[in-house]
Each structure stands twice: as structure tokens, then as C-alpha cells.
Amino acid sequence: MIDNRERGPTREAISDRDRQVGRILWIEGGFNAAAVAAKVVVGISTGSAAIIGDAIHSLADLANNGVALIANRLSARPPDSGHPYGHRKYESLAVFGAATLLSVLALEIALRAFDPSSATVTQSPWSLAMMLILLCGNATLAGWQSFWARRLQSDILAADARHTLSDVMTTVAVIAGWQFGARGYPWLDTATAIAVSALILTLAYGLFRRAIPILVDGRAAAPEEVAAVVNQVAGVKQTRRVRSRSGPSASADIVVSVDPEISAIAAHEIADEIERVIRDQFPIGDVSVHVEPESSADIESRPPDLSGHD
Image 1: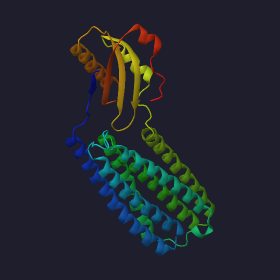
Image 2: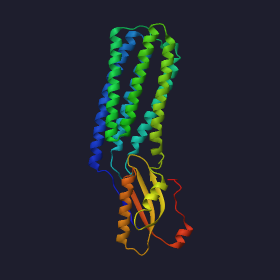
Image 3: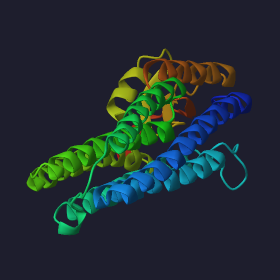
Image 4: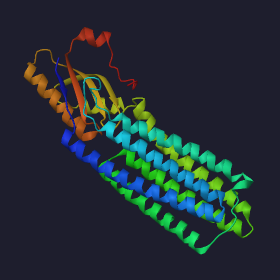
């Protein structure tokens, strides 16, 4: 048996990445804390239940920042005896939590839209200016987070960027509803809030689609496609099994059969080449290859396991 495993990024590289993610989350948390305070002041001074509700939304975002920071710290831990594949799924768990929170907030906004007590009462130039400043700040923050999420390939930052984008849409709805309500069109407040709720639910759905396959070990690549690539490696007689799982550290284990007469060194070289082509052609960094001697009896009794149940 030849069992080669590519270990992936170094501990130092992972640590630098996670420290940068943590700094971004701290900056976002500071902004959300300031937003909560500002919206509470505006909500109380104008008597607007909608703005108070938006302040609660920002408070939930602040709590989400805390959860993301904890998840980032936990996921940065290196593999240990209890977690030989590392702790990266804490990121996906945080994304799932963010999606759940978004869903709850979307339903809360929809229910609040039909609550007559959420109608706005007064308005003033300074309060409108403050809300517009917060709106611009949220939009800038969402774009900045999205940039770093792509650069650092961080699911936590990607989820937070979507969450911040939901804040932008919520604030737009609150400001619009507030202004329309003050001008005698309260039904527009309800319609706008429902539309924002639907958009937030769409964002939550996207996050669920990102997190759930990782949490339930969804495959990283179609086994038939992997087998087709592996079968082209010189010396491989047959790909007997392909299993993979997605995630920040996607992995695969592959069983191939080779000529029983070749040396262990030759089998090792075949395994190395399989690892190389898999890493080159699929988003998989951790590859384990098991090499078996081929026999006609084995081929007849045990067909390849390429069902995709991995």
C-alpha cells in the first residue's frame, strides 16, 4: 500500500490569513457598534419604530461579528489528535449561523412591516443626514469586505459581506419608508420592507448553499471526472474508488490498481503523479492515494466505486 498525503498550506500561512480576517472583523464590529448608537439616537429623537428596528438589526450584526471572531479563532487551530483534518469547518458553521440569523431578521422585518406601531412619527434634516451617512458607510464596508473575502478566500468574510449588504438594503427600506410615511404614504413603507425581506432571504439561501455541502461532506468533484483524469496517468490500470469532500481544505482519497510486478518505488511515483494532476485540475489540495495490485479475479468481483456517494 502506498498512501501519500499532501498537507496543504503551512501553519504560518494559515495564521497570517486568519489574523487578517480577525482584523477586518474587529473593524466591522467597531462600525456596527457606532451604527447601533447612532440609530438608537435617531430612532428615539424621531419616534420612529422602523429606525429602532434597524438599530436592533445592527445590534444583531454586532453579535454576529462576535460569533465570526470566535469561529475564526477556532478554525485557525492546526490539526490535532482529535481533529486530524483541522478545524476549518468552524468557518462553515459560522456561515450557517449567519444565514440562519439573516432568515430570522428577514421574517422579523416582514412581520414588522404589517405592525401599525412601526409607523414613523417625525423627521429632521440632521437625522436624515445621519442615516444617509450610515448608509454610505455600510455600502463601503460591504464592498471592502467582499474584496478581502475574495483575496483571502474566507467564507466568514464572504458571509459577513452579504450580511452587511443586507444592512444596506434594510437601511434603504427604512429611510424610504420613513420618508414616505411622513408624507402620507404608509403603504409604501410596507411594500418596501417586504421587498427587502425577500432580498435578505435570497442572500440567506446563498449562504446556506455555501455552508451545508461542506458541513455534510458534499463532494468536491464528480467522481467520474476525477477517474477519467486519473486513468490517463501512466501505469494506472484502473481507478477503483474516488471519494472527495468540499470545504476550505478540500480533500480526496483515491484507490487505483497497478501492475502487480512493478516495484514499490514505481508505485510511489504513480501515486505522486496522481496527486499532481488532481491538484492541477480540481480544487482539491489534500490528496490520499492507495495503490493496489491488479488481478483479474479482483476486477470481476469488485467493480469500481464511482457512484458519487462520497
